[in-house]
Image (cartoon, rainbow, N blue to C red; front, side, top):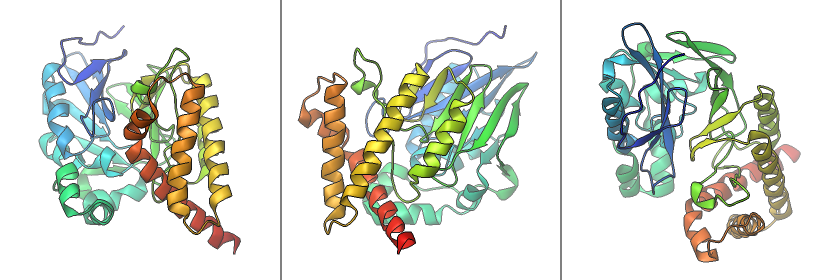
Length: 329
């Protein structure tokens, strides 16, 4: 049985099987996580980092390696679930700091890691230059020779710990999830949605889909979820946020929320003020479902906690409904 270090950690928590969840510090505590995965050879630990967070997250990742007694040279892989900047914005800097690492990414994401200017331009368009720089900083290109474009159903060998990369569209066309047989868990990125610890109740975790611009596709997402559940996972390692278990129950809740979100969109697809009505409708939907879940936060606390998600999810649904209308036209 492999023994994994359990020192006092400043930014992370060991959640078993040599998996360490790092709170990246983005937006607020327990909003976003990335992961360090360890495997031991006879002489040292080997490291995979799953998602990088933003540039602001990199010191926390490096601090966690230091706390674990691992050097940057022991990082074999940096694996990105997808290239949205809250997941991948710090990848270029991490690759500079970890000279032996190879970057694993979906083939559709490669060009954005080699030249991240398009990603940054999209963020600037949504948030403005000042906010984009404060939240994401200067994106660093990654040399193409250090990037591995991973195809569906391909194993990454972390010193004998086999990480299975799966093509998982629905949230984004360039999304992968990673199955870790050692923990019987899946690193889900955003495919399995959002579950914030502030929303936990005696009924368990609350979970809901994330539908940001521009590739939300509920039909494809349901197919992806079915494929992931066929693995019979015992745990999900979410980017937003952390490790969750009781997977069959969470899957049922997630698919229910996905149906409600889709029904809301269809009901508003012909609205002249569709985006604003989507925002209002999503907040009302989340609030009602949270009340049914036993959440004791006030309406204003829920609104504040979910403000960014409501805005981004409404944007993504607005784009999706526009695409549906074009395809039906």
